Image (cartoon, rainbow, N blue to C red; front, side, top):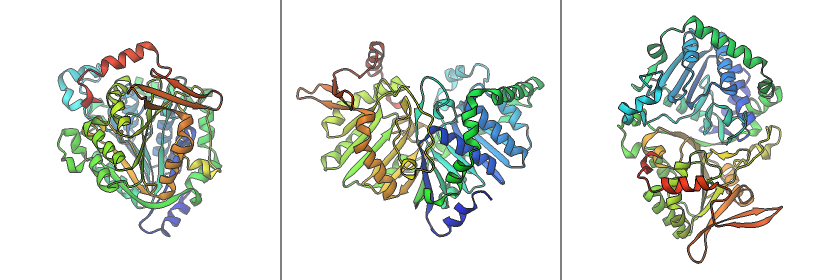
Length: 479
């Protein structure tokens, strides 16, 4: 078994799980492809978004190859995030070793978004979970969906994100949670929705795979997926793993039916596990809308002397202006309460980097390799770290289902704390208030020194105007 060394080593750490962060977009893709190649019996995949683009199609090709080897595949997708691939799903689901279910599916397949007109309350709740598990032995959990923007494979918007590979007891928890969703009433078999694939759909799928394998753009990803050194680093080298007590948090799928108690929410679990920070808290989240309760909570921490630091997207970097509008309503109050706010810059050139073999870089939890931040992580007192799909906004808290790992590791939590000191000032603007209570931003740069902005840095006028208008609308619960 290619990953037997990891499993053997986990026996020397009873009660602990081995975890290793992935920040490199190229490696995040390659590890998933390699896990498909080494899977022995099962592959369970659960995702909010799966696009029929370059990397999304290649990973479907990988799981199909595994199914042809006799591996049993279960693919659980949120229907909102996989538009345009009905034909592909029908073809895949017709394979005897592949089962596919859609969460909260649209009834009208052709004109999908018209469904919201008559079924908004149901369709507004989405499964936002992300996990990639083979043989119930190794899993990947974090913020990445399956699409080119998450793997650095396109021009335009690209996401800087964070996953963790895990082995050990926490993988059993992921498997149990997957089964909860798989067997939930909100999960519908693709065969019931789409029926048998047509001859035309089969031919289209075959032609798409053939074109993909001839496409020069896939070559760096194909090479990484077949790279023996990378496979060894991620699936065999125990020295790259941190062994720590790791707990999985996940919303019950009944949340998608509006039937969940507040005590069962991921946010409640986070508060229960993390307790009261004593020294410092670092929060990284792409979409930050704290709400009145969150503002009160963070302000109380800061007033108790806890150093609270938050990294989110700037207006120039965010891909969802409405969320930035919701966040902007709390910005001055957060700063006035003593919270340090940093807003990610938009980076123009995204390198395809490999970091295996350089352990210090592998552990880095903050990556600037993206035009937009998509990570969701939290560290408390340099002792405990959360990594998952949970955005710190009302949608994640109240509407969508979410999941993530709480990792009791001073090494990893300390890395995030150190990253705020060493890397965030170069990656982000800091939002501050002047003596008159006016909002301004500062930027630290080796080339230009310290710069000051009294408007949202490098955001066009039309976008600033849009955010100002959206901030007045009563849409916070939807964000």
